[in-house]
Amino acid sequence: MIDLKIVREDPDRVRASQLARGEDPALVDALLAADNERRAAILEADDLRSEQKTFSKQIGKASPEERPALLEHAGELSTRVKAADAQRDAAEQRYDTVLRSISNIIEDGVPAGGEDDFVVLETVGTPKPIDNPRDHLELGESLGLIDTERGAKVSGSRFYFMTGYGALLQLGLLQLAAQRAVANGFSMMIPPVLVRPEIMAGTGFLGAHSDEIYHLEQDDLYLVGTSEVPLAGYHSGEILDLSEGPKRYAGWSSCFRREAGSYGKDTRGIIRVHQFDKVEMFVYARPEDAVAEHRRLLGWEKEMLALVELPYRVIDIAGGDLGSSAARKFDCEAWVPTQNTYRELTSTSNCTTFQARRLQVRYRDENGKPRPAATLNGTLATTRWIVAILENHQQPDGSVVVPKALVPFVGTEVLEPK
Image: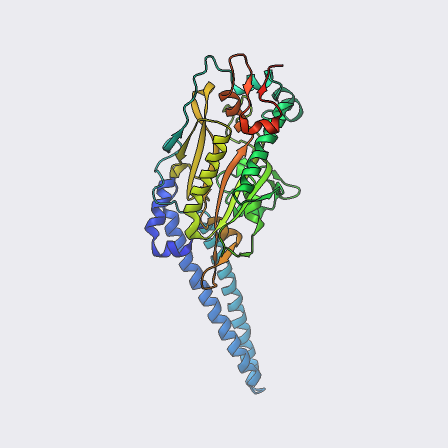
């Protein structure tokens, strides 16, 4: 959730953020009104409780003749206290509902607009010309790497088997990402992929896109779409020591997405699927360090893309295309020859203190006072990378050259047609 102090002191900034996201700026005024109502209700309930406490002492000192009248008044006062408590609780609930409905305040410099209004920050590498390129699924099937037909037979559409060298390629890609993460100071984690509702809600994923998430109703648990979720919950309710710098974790997990509303989009192959594996970076930092840390995460993503020898571009995502938790997001998009365009392989987001406020993750400032931490996340490798690797490294004879950094994991330099 956003910082209420900013809303009180600079509501125009929050309204501008809402407008840039294409969301309702009137929620800011609704929040201010709910905050005033909540504070008035708290004050009234506290005053009545103080009066009740004082009056109770008078009853203890009263004479037998005075006591019946005082007890009658005490009963009336008790009724008023209960009503005030109920009013306070209702006001608190209304306030919390409005507060949680407002997305994170975007950073200065975030492009305005929607999905197509991103800004290209840099383009790295030049796509090599490929005559009549085969797409990743055709290559994957001919090389014995991907089996979507049997995936659909076993689990339904948008499921698949990674087979033979395909399985080794995925494991190698993720192992390379894990090694790079450790080398850059991250602690590796294999987190649970089922989380409680309060953890999923705390990360901001139960808002507008909650229909993307698999929910196990009988257990009231959610399957994660990214290990960002359990890693964000890892320190929930804790006060962290960030005196020596950010806490960095890298989570390796399977991820699950319903892909609701995406019917007909990227249904071929493994671009948009219900299950995939990913190594995700997650950082807890002081708020004043978050912008610099965000750039570091982007730098580590770029290092990984260089290791697998892919041409790509970096884009600054527009406000209207940000998730509710992100104040800013950079994507790295790799060139996909058969689509003649760039497609997202990584995202890194600065969520400032938005998630930490919900999850009660704090650190102590220089005066020892607990304050909300900032959280950031970034993709280091996913199954989807295989799409770009196969298509960009294909040869005229149908083989695929394995990027040098992955050869030790895959066990061969060239993937040959079966």
